[in-house]
Image (cartoon, rainbow, N blue to C red; front, side):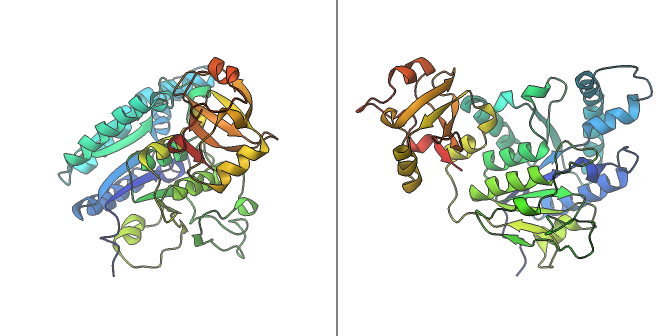
Length: 363
C-alpha cells in the first residue's frame, strides 16, 4: 500500500544546508529538484506548506562584496530584504512551470504571540491552500531582532505544522536523520523510529550547522514536541534525489528518523499553547500537591490554592510558564488574570482557575 492516501496536508521544512552549496551560495539545482518533487505531491492532491530557509544566503550572494563593516543584525536584515525577493522569484518561476502558484508568508515570533494574530495567520494560509496556492513561509528577518527571533526555522515549522493541523512535518537536513553516534563514524546508525516520550539527548550532537541557526538538538526537541501533539515528524536528507516523493508517495524503506505521533491529537488551542513557550511573559510556581494533581489528571486546572509564587509581569490571556517547586518547567498555559491579581490570590481557595485545563499544556 502506498502512502499517497496517508497524508492530506504536510509541512516541509527545507534547511539552509539543503538549499546552499559549499561556498554558501544558493544551490539552484537542488531547489529546482525539490520543486519538481513538491509539484508531484501537489498533483497527488496533497496540500503542501513549505517553510524555506535560504533568503539570507540569497541576499548575501548578491551583496556581501558591496557591504562594508556592518553589525550582524543589520547585515541579516539587509541580506534578507534582498534575498527574500530573489528566493521567492525563483520558487515562483519554478512552480509556474507546472502551472502552480505559490505565495509568500512572512511572519515573526511576535506576530504569533496572541491567539487572534495566530488565527489570522492560520486563516490566511487556509485561504491559500483552498485556492491551490502553495504557501512559502519564512521568518521576516528584515524586522526581527535577536531577542524576538525564532530559535530557527525548525521552531517555525513546528509551530506552522501545529497551527495548520498538518498530518506530518518533514524536516529536510543535510544528513539522513538522528544517529546513535557521530554521523561521521561509519559504525553509527540512523535511529529509524522514535516512540512518543523517548529521550534522545544522549545521541544528539550539539554542534549547529555551518549556515543555519539550528542544529540536531533543535530538530530533536521540536520533533518530540510536535509528535506529542499528534503529528508525525520525519527528519530526512534533503540532498537525496526523490526524497519527498519516496517518503510520501511510495513504500520504499527510506533511511530517516521518524517520530511516531501521540495517539490522540491535541486541540487547536492546546497546539497553539504548546508552541508558545517562547512568548511566555511570566511564571507560576506550584507546590508539590498541585504538581501531583496536574500530572495525575489531564482535566486538572491550575488553582490559586496550589500556587506558591508568581514571577514576572503579565496581562490576562498571556502565556505563562508552569514551574515545579524546584523551578523545573512543567509546561505552559494561558492565564485568566493579570500578575497583580494572581499575586493577591496566592493560596486562596474557592476561586476560578488561574489556568483552566483546556488552556494548559504539560510537557
